[in-house]
Length: 287
View (cartoon, rainbow, N blue to C red):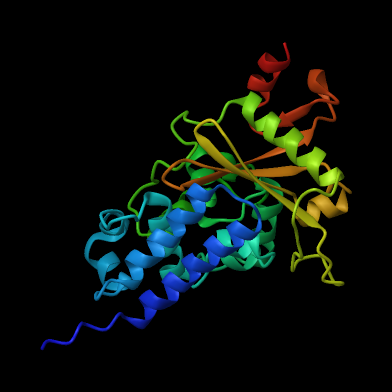
């Protein structure tokens, strides 16, 4: 009788992380569809007799997507784990996100620049950084010009195993409506103020290890959302940790993109809640 091939250890580790993500989402009252997607993905990875590294080497992220129950978002998560040893989304929900350290894995990005990128763009994943470079937003960060932005984009694409930016959730004009984002923002701030949300203990800027950061998982229309208050150094410095809301949105393939909603402090929208980078659409919405 032929023995069943042994599952590679790396696959078991990744399957364990996918199940851990499902468990955390369940504890935080996330959509059951998202929870089950990670559990099914874990079962698929744990059942392979070929390592995910071998699959990625042979066919890149597309080869993972071709596997049963592995959507694009989960494939990108696995790719991030393999290439960086981290999973930003999981770290965030555990309160352990350290984007500066993640960004320092990119050649020629030191501690100061990594800090500036996170503080100015409010992003914490390599996918979000790649998208910011592709859209030109990275060039607004002090010390980053067109040449440096292009080099960072190429390095991130190499780490993520892509020759060019992928069409992430929210790219190509496909984004949640302003009305939906502001609805999520309002729901989050109302429930956070009423202490009706689970809270996590962020590792950064939290010497007392206090569970102060509320997290919301919700669904509107075709999008799943996760919302948290900004925990950047700048948010703390400007005392905006109960104002700036970072919203992560996911399509049905679990691809992630993000935006930040703030109270505008100048111009015609002063005092209004606006989505950074989409101010013209906010003007139309309020008009």
